[in-house]
Amino acid sequence: MRPLIPKAKSSPIAIVGGGLAGVDAAWQAARRGVKVRLYEMKPRKFSPAHQSPLLGELVCSNSLRAEALGNAVGLLKEEMRRLGSLVLAAAGATRVPAGKALAVDREGFAAYLTQALEQEPGVEIIREEVTELDASRTTVIATGPLSSDALAAALAQITGQEHLHFYDAIAPIVTADSLDLSRVFRASRYGAGDDYLNCPFTAEEYAAFYQALMAAEQVPLKSFEEPRYFEGCLPLEVMAARGYLTLVYGPLKPVGLVDPRSGRQPFAVAQLRQENREGTLYNLVGFQTKLKYGEQQRIFRLIPGLEHAEFARLGSIHRNTFIHAPGLLSPYLNFLAHPRLFLAGQISGVEGYVESAAMGLLAGINAARQAQDLPLVMPPRATALGALVGHLTNTASKDFQPTNVNFGLFPPLTERTPKKLRGEAYAARALEELENWQRQMLEKE
Ligand SMILES: Cc1cc2nc3c(=O)[nH]c(=O)nc-3n(C[C@H](O)[C@H](O)[C@H](O)COP(=O)(O)OP(=O)(O)OC[C@H]3O[C@@H](n4cnc5c(N)ncnc54)[C@H](O)[C@@H]3O)c2cc1C
Image (cartoon, rainbow, N blue to C red; front, side, top):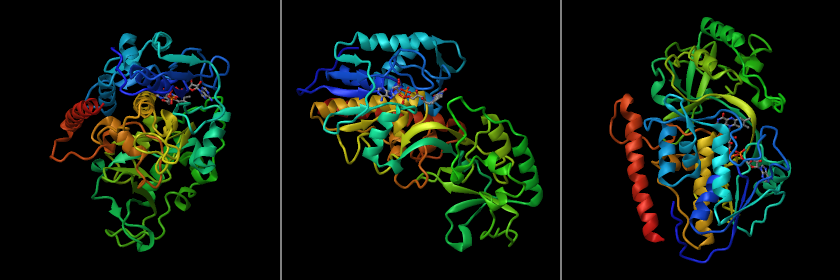
């Protein structure tokens, strides 16, 4: 790709972390003619999951997930390709057969990324752990879910300890249009409004649910993941194992709720809380879990009203360093209180290889623009990139958790579209808006 010529003189920027986000950030900035110092602590120091000295290491699966444009992650990848993502170029060059998914040769992929950045004249790779942050220097922090302790401490000083999390306790999210509204009712406890959707259980339905939950398969813990749960966010199955009725006194408590169809308090109630402004997504309150994904779908569809639920996200609990982005990050991915510090990747509050690289790409563009005294940019909300930024800056969300990209994060389509065609309609709208945005961005440079 031809380097973009900078319009203004620029000072070097720092990128901390040479993972999925860091490599795309470095590439974008260097391609804009900005000098980059990319700090990576490997091979001097490894996180508990990293093993290779190469940049852009995939720590687990070798799949970058679905390719089809009718799938949100397929669309995200296409948007990134159009913006010149190095991660997507590496994936294209090293792909291996994987049906409808984009999977890569793990070693080849990381080697491609490492070589591309080593050969890029504007990038200097420094193999050092960064332990302090300088808020007066344009820096992209992309140290990932297993950021080193010193860096996490430096970040906590900036965000406030209470805004930095070390574990995900993610509850599943379902799409609103997959719920059986003839079974659920809208109400808040004790008649204090109607903010929640409530799924009422009879005693028999609860018994069947409980039995299935207790027999379900869990994801084994990684060696570095001690099961140190906070009492406030115990996995559902851990709570259930404490006794047959523990859930009925916990996340499934029915008190203060009356089913308008029976006029009575149900035996138990699962509550769904609205997840986004558009009301297209609901999360299952208190359902953080370590059950296997297939098991979650099977068991949670036993909840009355969720028989045909479509899951935009499944539950999980794992080690993950991330900030509570809403209220702290601007839509340009820099801190509102420290505009020279940008955040990218999993630590910014997205989930997944592709999403992490996507936030790296955006942070790299904006860090370069800041260094060149150009106005910062944000992608349109209707693009997959913009939908993720929308999630990170959604201050209306009461329970912020990292997320994969999914169409529930997008502004709803304005025209009625059959379910089967919705993904493609989201993609067509997104790609058109992306094209206009790219044109406007170039015109203003
Ligand atoms: C165990 C595990 C398994 C995962 N499996 C998957 C999966 O299968 N599929 C998926 O889509 N997502 C997965 N994820 C989630 C996530 O997508 C990946 O972790 C992804 O690599 C995140 O990209 P990143 O750039 O934010 O961080 P990383 O890719 O982890 O990159 C961060 C880099 O920063 C370096 N670093 C850390 N601290 C410092 C410091 N102080 N100074 C300098 N360098 C530093 C690290 O060495 C690392 O190279 C997994 C996460 C974990 C923890």
